[in-house]
Every structure is written in structure tokens, then in C-alpha cells.
Length: 280
Length: 293
Image (cartoon, rainbow over all chains, first blue to last red; front, side):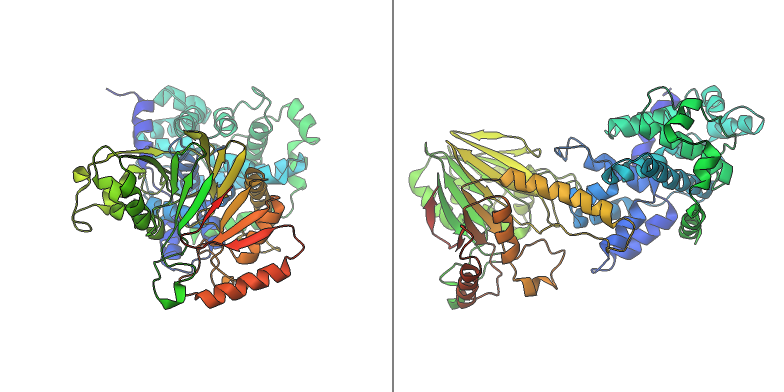
């Protein structure tokens, strides 16, 4: 009998993208004059497309001289046409089902991922992170909860139990450990490691509930963004408890969480655009 | 090293009275190292006459580096006579394909499928092997070292640097200058620009100071306006690249198939006039010509 992580790790290789992105990729690539910008804008907002393309770009099979952390970098290194064809080949395997046996709201999950991605990127800007690295923060935010998507799809009954426990007050990651034997951060990091994603990205997925373990900016920004998105209730990934904001983090950002949010007045507009994209 | 151009045409072989001077065969370069080791880059239709020449000195060993797998860079391979003769040895090197997960070995296998060619791969008599390269991986061929770098084309394309006893040569294969997919007013413009500039700098540093640069210059600046994304550079972009990389001798190749000799002559004259003081020797690649570097 294979263990839960074994089942998930085996199945995840075939994980399709979100229906909306799959449809957009198929539509855009059917046009010979497809705008590279439009295509990249679809891919970089979809956690599955992003993760799978980063997997391929970073694989020893492709053998790039350096690790690639964002879809922008991937399109510079491999060329737009190769990215287009990679996206198309991923799109043709199908799309995530609109419902799953876990009863997990995939649209809410996607919106939450997008919110954390956008906020993590803004926090990185605030920390003075080099402009070229900002998309790493977006990618990390987009992928931090990928483990939940994996659970919903490939271990749905166990995940349903975990979600039920979480409603009754247990933290979701603890509930997952109880019901599945591994939590979403751990399975997400296992997938990222198996797929050869850059170490910092893998680490930020692993530690997004324990931000001070490694003191990485990437992890800290994702943690803070995760809490912020819950306060603002952008999307929902089965977990609504806002974690306390540790003092060293407040010191690092030079502000408390609510102050950080006050400094992003136009975030609502960006989230509204995501909502339209995801739900249209 | 001695470099010989066996094919200098882009896209498709272009025989006829208007391409006699520069040549109509597609891409194939032969490099003979100081100690006589043979490196071939690309197997366009130019590899056929090269094979006929080599057939006079068999058995032989040669290394074939494929820049990328578009037809005009592989179409001559099934007509490369040494493949059919026992005791010859050929190693094919190139990039992997991330979309189909195809390897370098597949290039020949696919071309020799029975629908497309009468001889099966198993019937080739030479000792043929294939090796998929990683970017930056040095391959030692006798007294020379060949190193690939990934450039910009609609399929993965390696530019190759060949170094031999203090001399060096770089061939781009097919390469289009990097361009930003965002407009300057877009939020992501600066970030994309940064990713591009890092890659561009890496390419310039990789090429810096080579004795000879052979570059894809399929288009004029005016033509390029309608060919963005097709994977080729302009004459002016290649000249700029040579200047940036402090290269002293530039050969422009991958001539547009519809371009007659007279037009290439005129373009070369313009390039010479515009870059008279650049300290850069600009030449057009001519099929059959050899140079020593």
C-alpha cells in the first residue's frame, strides 16, 4: 500500500492547470500572431502552469547554466515560442475539475494564491529587493499552498477530513498531519524538490507556516502576505485563522501587519482584476 | 583553426542564377583544428558536398554539433555519405527539446523513418553516437574545446564557441536579439528588461574577444519590422553585437533565401560605409570559402 506522499507525488506529474487558464492558453495559441505578453500573463497567474514550466526549465534534461525562478526569466532563457509550446502541451492534457471529492473550493484557493503572490511581491518591494527578483516573490506566493491543490485532487477523502477538523478549530496544517500524515507545506515542498525547483522557492513553501525558522526574506514575505490575504479575505484556502505577527518580522518590515496593509491602498484594484480573470 | 563555409543560406536551399556568388546551400560549417580534428556545425544541405569531399579520406572521425533542429540545420544529414561507410565514426551533439523531451539521437531517427527516407537508421554502417549537451558544458575535441550557450530562437538553439590553442570562434546558429514583451508603460516592463539585460550581458561576455564571430543576419532593419519573433537578427544588430563583444572579424550568414547576390553586395557596401571607422572587419559568409583563424 503506497503512503499518502507516494500517491500524491506520483499523481502530481499529471496535474493540469485551472480551467480558465487552459481555455485561455488554447485560445491564444490558436492564433499564429498570439501576443507573447498575453500568453505570459496567463501562465504566470496559474500556479500549476507556473510550477510545471519552472519544473521543466530547471530540469537537468534542459541543462540551463542557472536556476530559473520566474516565468519572465523562463521566457527570456527558452524563448517565447518554446514557452508557448510548453504551455500548449500542458493545456492539452486537460484542466483541473471544477469540483473535487474533498469539497475544496478551487477558485477560492486560486484567488488566495494570487492574493498572496501579489502581496508578497509588494512586501519584497518594500524590503528593497532587487527589481529582477520581485517575480521570485510572486512565484513563491503563488505556489505556497500548492500542496492543498495536490491533496484536493489526489487525496480528496483524507483532505476532506482535514478540512472538517479545521472547521472545528484545529489548524488546517495540524489537521492535515492527523488525517493524511503530512501537511500541505510538507507535500508542496516535496513536490517542489522532486521537480528540481530552486532551493529558496522550495524552502519558502516548506516554511510558510514557520517564518522564523530560516530567516529568509522570501519565506517571511510569503508568511506576511498569507496573513494579510486572510485579513482582507481575498480568496479562501480552507484556513482563516490569522497567525500572530512575530516581533522580529515587524522589525524587519518596519511595521505591523495592519500598517503594511495600509501602505497598499491600490491592492484592492489588483485583486479585483484577478477575481475577474479567475471567475469570468 | 581553419573554418570553411559549406552552407550559408537560411531557411531553405536556394539554388539558381541569383545565388551563385554567395551560395544556395543551408547552414553547414567545417572547422579543422590545428591538429587536424574535424568539427562540423550543423547539417543543412551544405553537409552533402562536405560529405562528398570527406569520402575521399575515409575512414574518418568527426564531431557534429547541431545548433538547433529546424530543417535548414539538419536536412542534409541523411545525405552525408560518411554515415553509410563502415569504420567512420560520428558523434552528434546538441540541445534537448523540453517540449517533446526529444534527445539529440532522435534527430537522425526521425529523418530516417521509412516514410521519409529509404534507408533505415539501423542500416547506416558508420559508428554513430549522440550526446545531449547542457549549457556551458565543455566538449573536448582533440586540441579544441567546444562550449554551448543558449540563444534566442523559436526552438532551443545553442551558439557554439570553439577554442583552439589560443584562438577562438563563435557561431550563433539562429539567433534573434532579445526584446521586451511588455510596453514601457506596463508594470512588468522594467523587470522583464532586467532579465533581458542579464541574459544579453551573459551572451556578450561569452563571446567577448573571440577572433571570429559568425552570426545569423537574415534580415535588414526594415524587413525585421514584420519578422519579430521569427528568430533571426538583422545586419545592424550583428554589427552591434560584434562591437559590444570587442570582436574584430565578423561573418554575416543565414542569408535570406529570397535575397539575390546583387542585393547582398549592396548591403555589404552599405555596412562597410557605415562602419568604416569601427575597427571591425565585416564580411558576408560565402559558400566554399575558407579562412584561417
